[in-house]
Structure formats: C-alpha cells, structure tokens
Image (cartoon, rainbow, N blue to C red; front, side):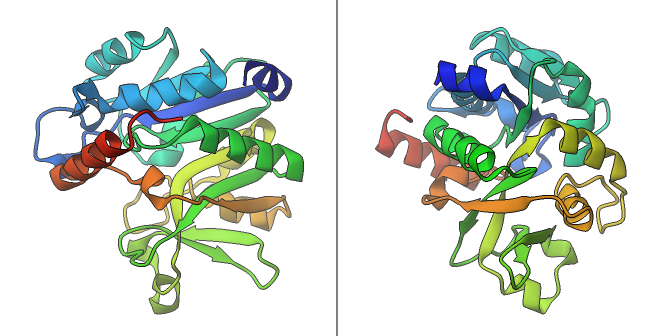
Length: 255
C-alpha cells in the first residue's frame, strides 16, 4: 500500500478525545483494553497500515495516557481538543497538525477497533477514482436505532446526515447509517469545517454537517456502502466492549 499512499498522499485523523461517560469508568474510553491492548492501539495500527506515520490523533481526556499508549504503536502526531465540543471541533483542532503533502484526509473514530485496513483502502480508492470531494463509509443495519441516518436525494446523491436526536419519523426509518468514517479532499475539508455551526440538539459542531455544506456548494459527495456492519461497530458501553472483544477474538487477525 505504500506506493499507493505516496501517490494519493493520504493522511488520517483519529478522533480520540472523549471520556465516554456511558462506559461507567474513570478511564478515557479509548484506553479500555480489547484482548489486553488499549482500544486506540487497534485503531492506530490499522491507520498506520494505510498512512504510515501520517496520522494525527486528537486527544483530550487523559491526553498524556492516550499519547503514551499510541506512541507504543508508532510515533505519530497529536492534536489537543481542550474542550469536547463535537466531532467537527475535533477535526478543526487536528487540521494544523496534518502533513503538508496530504491531499485527502481519512477521518476515523478511536472507538471503532474492528475496522480493517483493506476497507479504508477501498474507501480511499473509491473516493479518488470517482473524483469526489467527500466519500462516506455507510452500512445498512436491520435496526439503525441510535445511529445517524444517511439521507440521499432521488439521484442517489448524499445530501445530509441526520442524528437520531434530530431525525423525524421518515428519517428514522432509513436503514443506511453513518459509520463516522470519511475520506475528504483536504481543500474541501479545510473550507467546509469553517462553516459548521452548533445548531443541533447537543449544541456541538457536528462533522457530519460538512455533507450538507458540500451539497449546498454543489460538491461531489458520495457514499461507499461497506459489506460488513460489524467492522464499524462503535464502543459506547461495557456491553459493546465485550461484544467487540468477542468478535475480534473469533475472527483472528485483522487485514
């Protein structure tokens, strides 16, 4: 993948600043172990297989402990999100730390440890070959409750993501959900991130809102539907942690 990476100039941002209050623990969420290894390390190993050291980890809660865990994997860059004001704010904090040569930016969450490098590579290739400004990795779930829904127009263009708290009944019926994983052209990311406003139920800057910005600007915004919903399983509770650990143990080494 190294030669491909040099051609496409990919950098990766990993969002890992949250505390994870639903974990009922004083430990930052991404430090919880899966098969004896901090969750963030599983995500970082996968990211480094795609982008080598061109990875920026956004830290916040227990920043030094998260950094220490990451540095045992590979020497990467860090960005501090001093207050957790949403995913859009986290990416804003990371932008100055991106390497200058990065043309496209993959955005991952630090609590999605089952994601495979091959899936990230497919997302990047799909994005670059289609000439898009943004490509979202989405998956179809039989029960999409709790996830942001992927809203498309009649031409199958991605128009926006609606969070569960902001969704109406028709939107809640959509089975295609946002994995929180994106590939975005750097110029579009830099421009659209400045347009975000905290006009939502949480009063935060949602990264998902750059999709609506791109649609409004007439940008090329698309979706790649992943084949394995388990890969994008996020960890928000102790039960999620146990379920992900079981999946990781049964499937063996990720690829």
